[in-house]
Length: 372
Image (cartoon, rainbow, N blue to C red; front, side):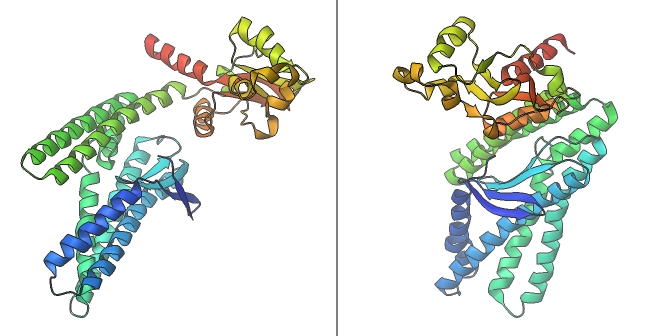
């Protein structure tokens, strides 16, 4: 989940908001200010409903961040990097750089979030007890936050991947079987089963006349189903690339072209005859840049013969590069983040090969077909 707006960082972890978050923030605030608080506390002034509604909504999403931050801090303590925390329409998500290396680490990481939500619920219980005799609006805010954080903890403990409960389930099966992929498959199937129950429940609620809540349940089910299937694919990908480096999977028959070659000659003599999509531009043995079909298409055809590859290429200073011993999975993740399909492998300032997304995916498919 990519952030649309960067808010800063917490403990070195980038914090952002996806644009879809504004939808749920507005819906939660309207629900509190126009329905929940007016129906529960009809004697308040109209302005109070909005002030407490907005404050409650903001603190609720801060609680979601705290939930994800707990996951992230435990992950980092276990040596697993965390790329970001992002708020979006279904709450929040911590983007973990890789999966846990041991079932015990997975178990602790999974339980950290619900435990944080329970601690927050206890804190607001104390606040509610303290504020009830002296300030009803703040006590009402605390009361709602108690219930929503308890609900957040309970919901996340549902035993279906990728919910925290599904990760707990996976860690236990992984611990018992010793098979990470098998454990992920079982937890993902459980997650999809729960997702289908949410969808069916949402449809039933809609036919009962409550369209809004029914639609919301169905959307949650759809999201869980998609996330469970995607989580299993990601686990298979990681399992297939585990232990391999960029040096193992790179191609060494990279075609190198000189700086002064024209784009027209590159197309006529290299791209069309070979159907290659990427070429390394060098001066001697030194990497100057790469030339891709995207670079070629950025130049009008009537200028191909008067434009050199040095003018059209992506220069080395802007390139993402890999080294021979870089983990193959981290190389693929870097390509995804940068939205590129090739990455030169450089050692000692010289290009020694090229890692291509297509090659990595073919390697993964071949391993799956062979059952390796």
